[in-house]
Length: 443
Image (cartoon, rainbow, N blue to C red; front, side, top):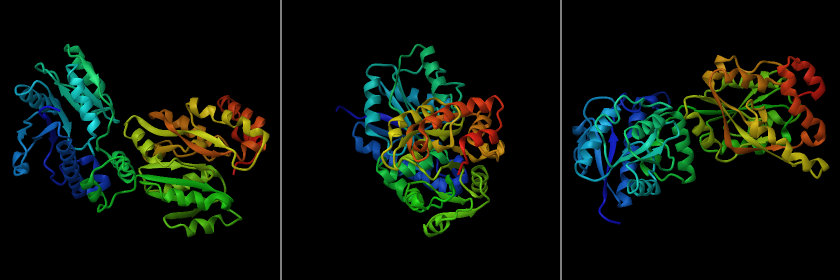
């Protein structure tokens, strides 16, 4: 394996109110500081356990980190680029290659570190992309003066701008595998999923998160009308998903046991409104506390890792909404139309304006800005997506939700025709009420 290579861990003193400030709305100032401390502990443990790394703390306040048994270097003044460059140049004066990581990269994966070291045997620089447009690791073999000066930090363009700068200064660059750091509430939501599933090993972080009161991040809103046959299974699965913080059922006047079922499932909030899916979803959105609202039809099933996918998308500041692809299944019995079910899913792979059965998730601030769903009898989902597209990007997620084929299989050919023609007719000005008369009443 050879001698351990220097890895500088950039970190700040965990002072309440001054560290992880983007997490304060979700965790409070003390909670954000405690999480910062836990993330650092887990990062150092992962590096020390790897054996290939010799961690060195690059700090803003040396007194806050003395007594840890690790070498310390001061970051010094300036923006992040100036501080990174200062530490890197100091490290390169003592070693042929240097790697820098943040202290907020949970369960820092050993394969990523091995990939970075191997990359530095071939190239002048390595970068590991982060989901928010930055990077979680930077490694260099040489660092020309002013290499990182004036770059846009903490933004969606950070990685691209840094790589362009490195290449412009004559460095060869390799990209490593993608990982994530914990900067905002979306990252905490993803972290909670990764920890619960064991894909991240970070014992200090898990312990701290288990003691903190975390503001709701993801609220799931289900508009319901006479769904007693499937509602209980849907709700119990939802409340068991990691990092689903709220489940709100909005009943539009069910005549079956739907309301009683919703009341009986712990962790579910029941609301009642007049019938109308758009009206019901708007009522749920008003009552929800989450930063992100996921609108889910009762006959649609989220994948178990749904929150991870939504969180990865929402970690990108330009994304205002995201939607899954669909997998429509025959869950009502044998039908000649079942052979056509794959055609029902084609639109979810290509449409720019998602339908409601794609479990659309929206930033609550963006939802409010566009006025929520228009309370019309049909195409409210497409209209909402159209309005949101004027605010930012609508991301298509790589995972799929499972959609009941119950309605499709009643009239497969007619449904395919309507699904593929209605958006165009709507854009041409055909009123939703007219489209509803053709399609039939929407539950």
